[in-house]
Amino acid sequence: MSPKRPKVKAGTLTKAAGERQPKAILRPPGNDRRLVVSFQHVDRAFDGAWSWPAAGTHDAWEVLDFLCEISRLTWGEILSQETGPSHKRHKKHHSYSTETVGSTAQARLADLRLNEVTDELFRFRISGPKRLWGFRVEDVFHVLWWDPDHMVCPSDKT
Image (tube, rainbow, N blue to C red; front, top):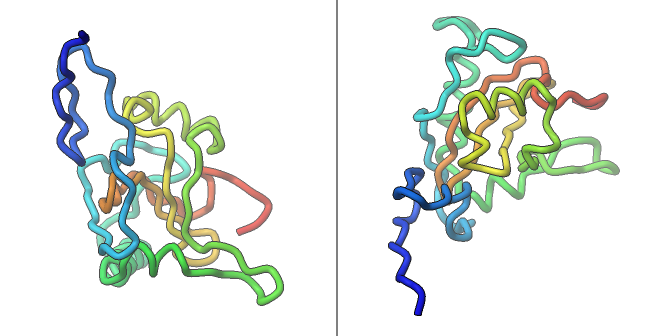
């Protein structure tokens, strides 16, 4: 008989000695629950293409306004939002495998050891090329990066 594994409390990002770190979504997120925002993992030290805006700037206010508005919605409402012309609608906010983001973002995740926490990033499209990146643990969105020029996961489309 194998020894009993200790139960991991839902939403816990710590690990017991000798246990593998749980990945981001520990139980299926409920689309009927509201988004909760955490700044526990914000990457304020990164100095590059997606550095955080200075306090009091237009971008800083834009991020704050967006978070205030989006936190009033359920995950179902967030995930159902679409963008683009009527004949080419697509999801406005969605996840990405960490393997599909740019190499700089992958390296930064490794530096922060967040590749041990999650296999998937979630990004919010704010406007034009502006994106807010993080990862989701159940109903909690952990904010990581402000990406004003769409450089975390560059593409031809914005």
